[in-house]
Length: 333
Image 1 (cartoon, rainbow, N blue to C red):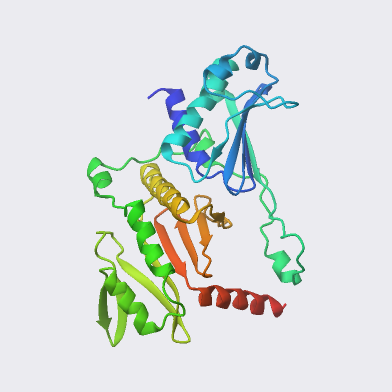
Image 2 (image 1 turned 180 degrees about the vertical axis):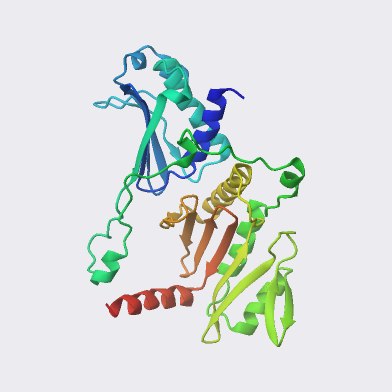
């Protein structure tokens, strides 16, 4: 593997963590005009290549798939939607490496450096919150570290072929089918009726110490347990794993999870329309969540972490209870 190939892999890994309000700039150490930069939003990432560098005016950027600058702007563009697949991230990373090497003349990844930060989380417009709620907003982070782009980062350990073959994920259409099955029930759904819904899906009900547990063995996942959360005798939320869950994180498994999440989110968008993004956890930059709120008030969610992909349905009553709990919590401050 060449230096540039290794750097492309590093950049793919870094791009996975460019989330909402994150800005990443990769630039030449000795040339301020030679750079590519990325600005994350809730639903997309805008990638730009410097248009003020002399090399940007030779047509080389266009040859490698960059879009010309908009009227009144200097930089070349390569926007993409999120969640993105590994193939989409790699195509962008290769386009960026081509810009740095071919258009700007960077000889080696060792000649590059990066600068990154996460903007503070803004409060919604037109609302008045208790001070505690404002204090809990993400203050941002500057500088923001991207360890995959640091020259002394450890080389990632690759899984064996046997390990890769063993990874399992539910098919996206199956994920959507299960979520739609739960979300379109006649709400409110009593506790006993919720277990009947699980049985109709082919899931099993196990009893231990007089307590019922729901298990989804059909997908062959490492964690078949389904969380059924109840309140006041009614279903509040059902949550399940849609991929295997692991202990040891590798780039390959993260790519596997990211592709499974992107495929399921795309299938969800086809079924329910555009989704909304939830805030990324500050302690897990790989995390992503997409939400759909249905006309009946139920809410569907899909969540990506470094170790698994999960999905959930929250009943209309659960959505209202969650909102009330949040309001009550902050009312005490």
